[in-house]
Image (cartoon, rainbow, N blue to C red; front, side, top):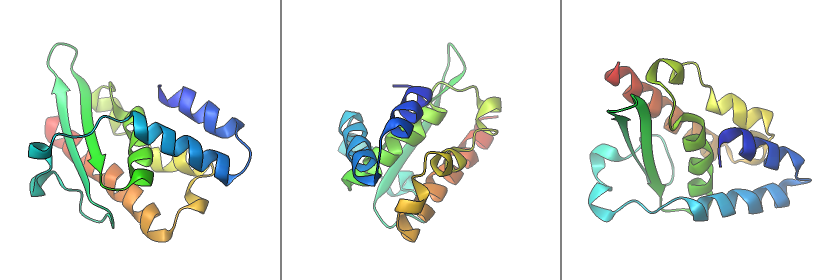
Length: 135
């Protein structure tokens, strides 16, 4: 699913429980990261849960390829939304994407604990830092 489909689906749902269920389903669709990739260097700092993130550039199309995983199901679902924002974007376009703002627009941030909201910010910031290195 691309981010527009995800946003449309989440915005059509009534109530936090329905949105939560959809986020959990998105997390189930996210492939697990192989254990050898769950290294300290790949770990996102500032997340209460363990989150591992790898960002690369597709050499043929020069688009972002991001894989990530978490040890908690809800964060895995949130990761699926974040990755839908950035995967396949051109690096120069990724800097203008504001996934955190999108979470606000979908009404998700107000339902997340402050530590989960900070975790979302930390993931987005790490993606942007890694994109800067690619440019």
